Length: 299
Image (cartoon, rainbow, N blue to C red; front, side, top):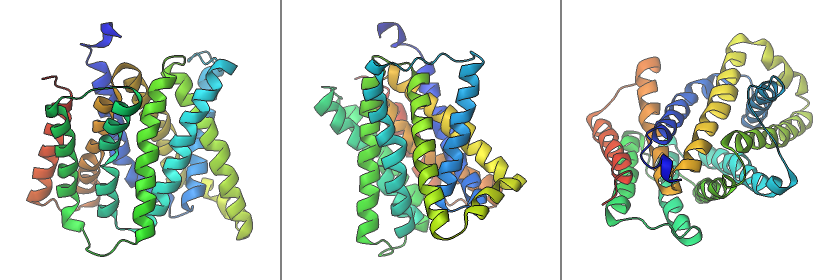
């Protein structure tokens, strides 16, 4: 672990995952024109799982899932993607986007608490302040679209469930990195996500007699392109970057990069959807960047 202490690559990987996740909402919106959320998740993770299997078969990546590794890997996959996406989907549907963003920004705080509890990780007062600052920055970014009283109690509870699942994923992924490579962790996540969400998506389609709609969505080039982005970049590449960073960094240092995601989401909206950018959002983005930088410092 010492040889990675001065390396920038884990930080670059964390930032890369935030950029990919930040731009993913553009493609999610396009795909949701043809698929419901769980069908989209099933399609996304199926593409990701097949893509990683092709890499494995062609020996581009090395994956050796042994019985010794399975327990920890399944635990990772249960928290992320299964529980996290279920809670996040329900929460986003019942609250506003700004409320969702603010609550999801609590993940680094939850990670820091769990890391101190389970992994005996100790943060300096400066790092705690930086984590809280990044949460405040996300709140400022979300402020222009904040709707007082728009959320429902059940939606807030669901988002808190997503925060809990997202934080525990960081902890168990760190634990799994002791026996499994980042590629193996990602591989298991993609296949478990593909099997679970496709089963759920097909079941929902059968309930509404819309199975043909599920399949015909792949005939649309716009939908297919969106699914490829979400499957290959937003699932395989982004989660590999996160798992790689977690294998090299403490969970608290890795998790704070999650709060860069809304910064790039706003940037994507401005660049590709013509959305306006108000001064308070620029201030929020600057605070998030300072918070992320601060967590990486040791004082």
